[in-house]
Length: 90
Image 1 (tube, rainbow, N blue to C red):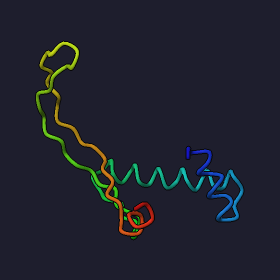
Image 2: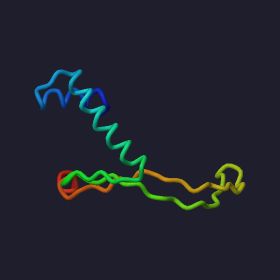
Image 3: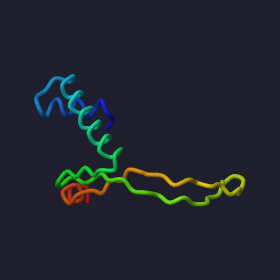
Image 4: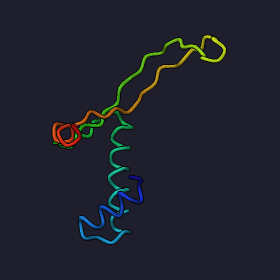
């Protein structure tokens, strides 16, 4: 499912127009992005939680050349699925 499919699904399920569904989806994405950007957490009960994790700096290797590469520390988004999502998939 891509973004257009998701918009169509939201429009159908919530009885909205596609433009209203797109604005709603964009608002959700914006809210999650902005919250994670400042280091917050977004938890949706039963679905899962979006968090930010700090990754330490490390030395890696280029698989083609074997050359060592310094990888700087970074912050990465992480998703942990909730119990309802796990049960639906599993």
